Length: 257
Ligand code: CO8
Image 1 (cartoon, rainbow, N blue to C red):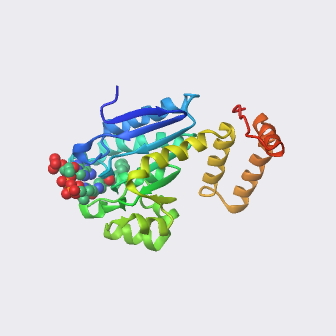
Image 2: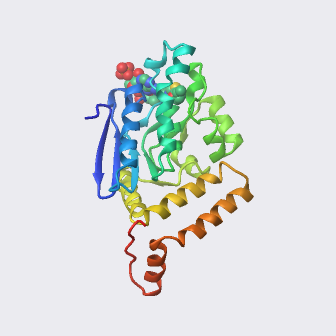
Image 3: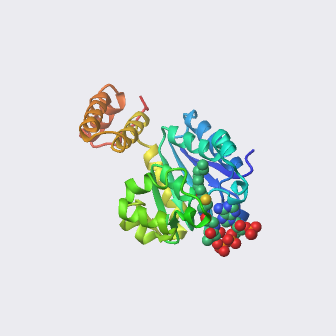
């Protein structure tokens, strides 16, 4: 049913594979609409506990589709905003999303990876914000999320020079959570997502909300939000089950409530 992405379920994990090989998975309006739709479906599907977004061996995504954008003018970019409205859906998604990145993650591709909850990278991954080289600036978080995750100096250098950063450097500066051999990337990402999907769903969503608060608010407000969420887990059967299972030295059977 989709033309620019492929979706597959693996237990409680939805795997979304960007699939525009001739354009190194460049993010055009159709791809972003299809990705948004798949995420919206996943959000409403109780059988899905976590999501993996991945690309090909050569490219996660080499940016927004330059050929589609080239003749753009302000009014249509501003009014239609087709590529960035896809990012809004990712931002709205409450379920954990892992970006599994091999090859190029450039421009909008790097921004898409950063919009996910964390990035697992293959040792072949290359990250960058090369917009400046084509007379543009990042438009979906490249100046904001990158600065928050790698700090001002490196974000400024990457955005001002457009240079690419390899996986090991990306791991050193905190852009990616882990680097794995390219051949293991998808299995690692899916296993990690399955692990997350196996925990209590409401608790998982609360963790995601709480960590995201760290980037949205003051430390005191964030700590208060975290503490209230911690108190709130004691309203869940899954908290009672999880702690009882620990005491009884058995595996917990979470019911997602
Ligand atoms: N858009 C469209 N087509 C692309 C893109 C792209 N971003 N990247 C690659 N392609 C196409 C190429 O045109 C080529 O097509 P064709 O065979 O028809 O000529 C095909 O993919 C293969 O690419 P290359 O031949 O260039 O492959 P190489 O291995 O030689 O080079 C690179 C790979 C280095 C990745 C190179 O393709 C490249 O530099 N790509 C562009 C990278 C870039 O500048 N990305 C940033 C784009 S701007 C952006 O992302 C703004 C985001 C804003 C989001 C929010 C919007 C509001």
